Amino acid sequence: MTDHALRLLQENPHLAELAAFPFNFDLDRADHVEDVRLASDGPLKPIAGDDTGGTYFVCADGSVLYADSEGSAGIIGDSVDEALEILVGLPGWHDCLGLAPSDGEEKILAEIAETEEEIREYYGIDAERDELRAALGLPERSPVELIGMLHSALLRTEPDFLLLNGVEGGAYSLLDRHPRPPLWETVLERGRADLALLREGTSWDEVARDRARRALALRAAQYDRRDTDLALLRHLLKHEAEASMTDELRLAAVLVGMHGLAEDLPLLYEVRETTYDTWCGLGGMPEPGASGEELREWALGLDDSLFGTDPSDEPLLTWTGLALEQGMDELARAALIRLLDDIDFGGRRYDGMPPKSRAAHPLRALPYAFEELGDSFQALRAQRLYSRLQDTAQDRVSALLTLARMEREGHQLREAICTLARLRDTLAKPADDTLRHWRGTNLGAYIVEEHHEVVRAASADASLAEEVREVTRAAAEILAELSEAARASVRQRPIPESPAG
Image (cartoon, rainbow, N blue to C red; front, side):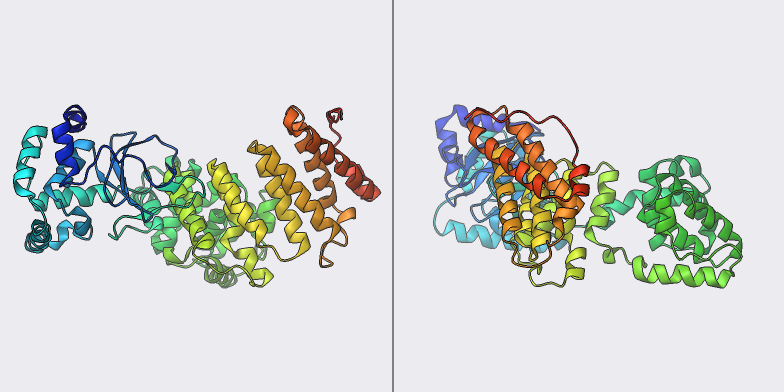
């Protein structure tokens, strides 16, 4: 598809006026109501707008993204030409967003006819549509075909074209409400295909030697269990041990153990002894010489508490992690941003939760998930929210320490300096006794080290000279407060001289 029609509109004022009214594609309204960007950081070019404050953007592949003024967005065409076909062919397209090809021709035609009759009560669209179609070279398609094109385009919006508020980082809602497959289904699709190959007796080593494929094949076996899978599960278990302790290693051990065969105990014991981490992670496993029933009871207990047979019960972060391993970065990014929005703007409960529940709350892991993705903007957004929600002084200091590190690594040095100041304020007035031992622990050493790292990073910026001097002084004072053991554990690296006053 091309943008031939757009060039014609740009070159012909009469056609541009006709597109603006009655079809509400106005080249003079290309300024959106707020700064926006794609989550993928792909290019986004505004080309037109409408009288409701909505804006049409062209993306890198030529797709047209429409964003309204109320915080919703969606792809409406594979190209500008296709988008104009839909806008001209369905002048009431906003009212057609709920229609899908599955609704059938009769319903589609009836709803579109009703919408267009309402429009005709106020102004003409028929002669204008014929003129603009002919001038732009747009084919005359049936409303049913146009709905199919629109529906297909809308479903492509996520993950590649997720629109964000450029300042806060929150995601726009989808323009439509058509159902999409859950994240786990999309991620698990490849694993199901590989599990089918393994069951056919092919690609055993090819799948088993690839960590990403092996992990998904094990997940697929978790949700589609067969007694005939034992041999392939043993094979995958042996290879997964090479990755040391993973959730999938524990899963493979459980799936093998659930068969209840004592002959598998030597293999499981060998896997457990691979590394210290595997020894800890597979603790409680029956020793060689135990009965098959003991092995089965152990496996069933872990399966009940950690795994199960319903993929929708798995934490979202399990699937985003697996998606990242598969190279499905934008799919993972979109899901993580939606989760963060739900916590940040949707009020998902965090304040007032007991400590054990907080430890399992996804907000705790979100900053690191975004860091793994390489998305420092969203990682900082998540960590700032996390640090604001800490109740105890120790948790607040730990969260602020991580935040300062993230800000420094993201070259937000002024922000990192301010974060360290907030950290020191908490040390000085902790409001509880959770920090009573900080001077004699690694926490104290880490605080000093982060102060030193910020000084190193900011020393070359003359505009931060006074702030650097303050951080340098603070680091020396904190170091002097540490116990001898904690002070000795501080990494000794050269620190730039404080800028002259």
